[in-house]
Image (tube, rainbow, N blue to C red; front, top):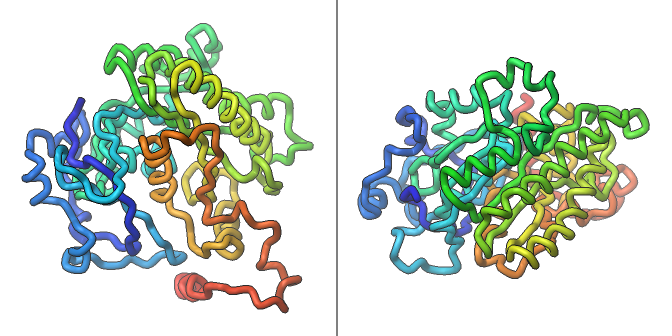
Length: 402
């Protein structure tokens, strides 16, 4: 397994600042993150480790944000062998496969980074039509700034696999997809083939992450959704998880963990989140409980799902009202701040770690507490109630608009 300069992950609060020193990076090579290979832990520490006590002396400069954010950062340990203080998330020696990474600004990417920061080896599955652009961006260094880990090294993606989780095996692929030029040049991308290829390349994995969803009619109300659109949403967004886990369990080590991503629309009405997507998320959560029992009893693998709040990702923007949902969350959630992808990534790292060894079949909410609310407190009907509000984010929003 590849050596890593990020042996563990500890949770610490950090201001939303970006180091000026992170603006320049070396171009990546065909095997990403090789620039740190061969250096000793001591050398890497002297070159790149940033301690919480030295943040003020590292030349950090704050950048303007639309809303004030409290970003949770992963702080790495000092060496691969030294005892770690506190209660670290240690995934050294573990291998993770993250399905559904096609860019550097979604939850899948953030989860990969947090797992890498904790020491795990990273494999990703990318939707076939997006594969060339994703790999090209990695090779050309376009994601280098996003690949920076807490110790200053770059996340290494050991291998990128083409994947279309809608199809279980080659026999399931229709002729029009086989002839589609967006799939030309790629092979072995059905679920069964990907798992077989991973087995040939690496033998086993320890962590499986499902970070993909699609609903071709997501903008349609449920009453206007066709049978095709509804079933397509369930196939891509929920059954794909069953298929991935079903096939990967054959090569998952006992004690492993599997994580998926869901959304509050599974249990609350979110107008505009249509096309059967709310039904798909409900199915995913129900399946999580059943799969936790079956995978736990048969394979000693834990199964959980994270109900993440709204994120300004490229995929979410396709729905068309993501900015509105983020503003609503900030106004009404117990914690009045914009959710960061890193916070979801770090929650996933915890669930994948031995620290969560007794947690399975759970829906873990990472949404600033919005799931707990029964009403929207920004409604005019509550104007006469003395409800505590953090007005600082409103000041930042006004400054940005000006």
